[in-house]
Length: 241
Picture 1 (tube, rainbow, N blue to C red):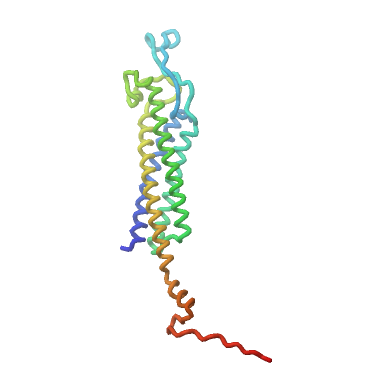
Picture 2 (cartoon, rainbow, N blue to C red):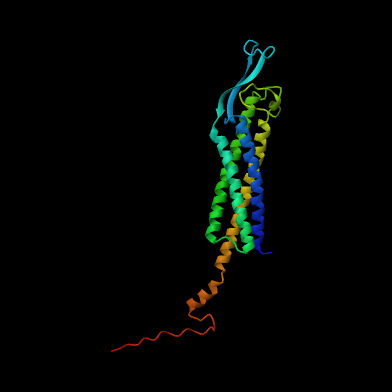
């Protein structure tokens, strides 16, 4: 198996994995956004407060509940969702191209390979930043829910604890944790794609340098015929007086 074919097969496999990982980012974030009514839980701030029976007549005695002072910026959740959607669409398009190249037994041009490297590196930094945002935002939300770990329950257990918010919090930790792990997997896959893209660029550059037209061009520059190796005749000038 030739080098370019191995690289194409590896790139196809990485694109297929990126589609799955991207979906595991988009679907949990969409479910969480629907459960939270379009609000972003990342970097949300709040505190716990106890209400007596007069304010909450349906609950016996004093009932503590969470008060959200400010919901997180929507851009944080939108950035995470964008990286997941772009990964799915790009993986599907590039996976189809890889299969087409495998069937046609050819690869990208030198310029196209360079653009692939540039795009992969840019999205690698974007996905890495989105992964950090999601991780830090989830930690901030968990600190709010557990009151800086002073509550008797953990962040994962708080899904089953009534927070008395106007949003559905029954599965927020499962959704955000799944999106977090998947997004870090997407970042690792983009790193792999960047490495493979650099290798394909190097291979395309090598093929371009040692192409079949180079010996013929060299012979023409030296003034030899490519067929018989005989020197080309000098041009004859006729002067008319």
